[in-house]
Image (cartoon, rainbow, N blue to C red; front, side):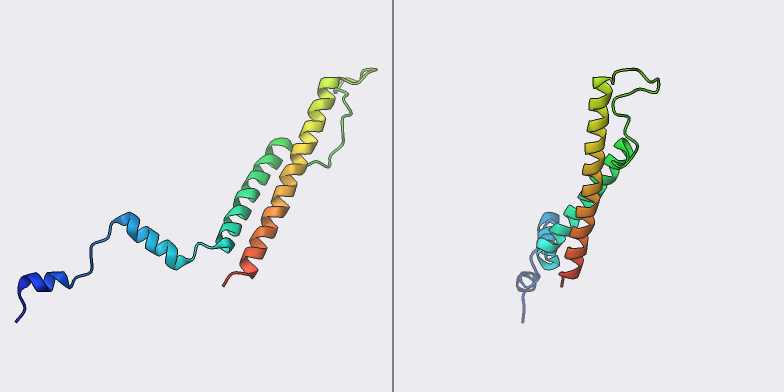
Length: 110
């Protein structure tokens, strides 16, 4: 005949929420493919934000001239135009790299 104390000892131990979360992560397999997928998502997000803020890099360059044409180009406008071109190119590149990372993570996942 079992005593109440013996039946309590057969129950599984109570686990805290963070312990359950750790066990789920181990079962879910937070491996390199999942990390690559998350990297791709973050790269896409940053790339889209850069493109919305700075525009596509392939546009008509102002070559330092303002809307009113002057005889000499404005160096500040030329520097701003160059910066916007590089940041737009960076945004477009991040979108391409992020999409490629997501494709690789999807193809090589289990």
